[in-house]
Image (cartoon, rainbow, N blue to C red):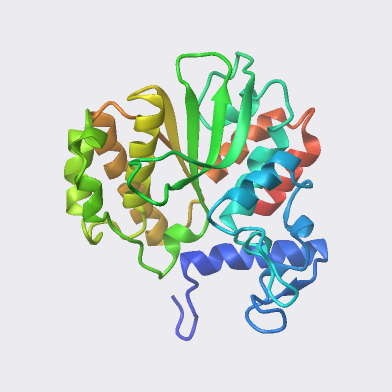
Length: 293
């Protein structure tokens, strides 16, 4: 790198690209506290989305624990951030919520066959309890309930810049090991979880503890191996992206050895696959490719 040149972090690369997209669209941006803070928030929720929120999607976001829509006069909502993972997930999946055939999006995610129609319901911010004694259950970003097929649910955890943040992610609390029943048929996953308890000093980018909690909730609600679980993330250039991918592969090897039907892919790959369906979905594909590729 030439002397004096500043190398952007992976997170900064992604955010900077989103800022340029917003400028190209002529969007006004504000800071996290209105006039204060870095200007990476749109002035309206609608400006950060491809289409207006589906009514049911809005209700589900309001019921979620993330407070995505809770903006104030002097403070924009989280979903107004250009780097909001919630906005990215909604831009990709909410488009299909009212469709009678969701096979294009499920196949593009690697969760179904591309040559077979699929009816089903798409939901956001769904909670599946791990243990009745726990006050909170983790929120899954996207849940697809297919009307047919072997699997009862297709669950998706979505990430944008989170994997490249300097903020450390948490480990597994000891309370998760007080109920052996939730770990049935998950011996290798449990062994990994204990290595992440109480703190995760193993994974630098992957929030493995969160994924394990989702697996426990899905197992309890739908039964072992009766669901597909996808980790969908935004890839980054350079070492952070490489390390993150290796961590995903390591995690996948562990949980798959327990029979968990675990998938992993990037948003970039999903959007490229969606490009094959430009005819009939032109504006949607154009928006995703212009903004996220």
